[in-house]
Length: 359
Ligand code: M6R
Image (tube, rainbow, N blue to C red; front, side, top):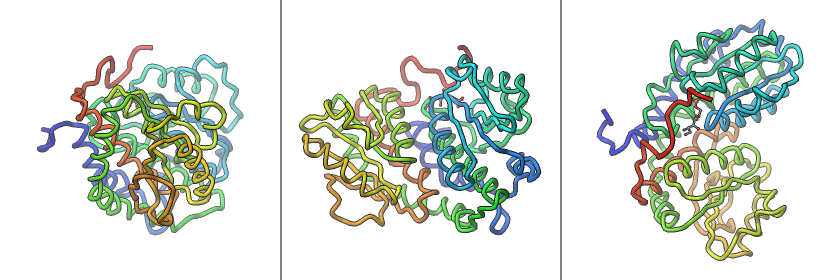
């Protein structure tokens, strides 16, 4: 049942390119996303003026990438909140706010409570879930399935990347309807499965990196924009299965405190797929290098050689907006191999349940 892999997590990481094809199938026609295929109508999308995303854990991290994509492509403002916070925060939402709940299981108690709250307040509710017939799916006005297939490992991988894909489809559908069509990105989506296989083929160096992390105590992840959202997911993944101390920071924020923790040989993983701000991140790399950090870069392969990093893992980024799912792969594998090297129970980490159905 693990398809010849030693753990479900590795199987689920490896099957991502194929699962992406399933997730995209039938949802794109020519240069356009078909709104009905993601549970929405053009008439409704036309009316959306604000978006509120709610989710927990990894799904929250997908939501942060969704915010960046929807805001930059469709120019519609998006808030993202952790469900356990949102439900008690007396939230203020504008009329015509679309509320999007993201949940692999569709059963996370806090996320469901937010959906119910949003309905009571009279908002249109939309769920992105992997589980057909789940409570989130049944209790929402509309639903888009991630179609990732069953995810068994506690650490979410393929559900996360397909959540990002569905959010990308929503961003592109909104962008089209609100007058900012991006046919290049719509077509680019269809190339992702192929690019995903190419990324998986060159992941050998991640094992060396994992060996190094496994013998240490902590690791920092930094990035800007969507790369920061990826950094947050990278640190959660490694924490939950390898029990290493990990922290994620916006690259530009380090000097406001965290830099104090960077010492000789502290491992730092920098994610650099946002070309517009690459030079800014380079200056942050120099700051950690000056304190002796050992720096691994997960970088857009079009960035020049000679970056001030110690180890480079290239991700072939054609269109930066579509790169998060590709850059997620080395982060997932890094967590996986680190946990394996430390002898941990990868699929069933301590203290965690696959689905958190109690508050
Ligand atoms: O089923 P959900 O997507 O609502 O679950 C949310 C989180 O509990 C979940 O993503 C959790 O953070 C994962 N174990 C992360 O790998």
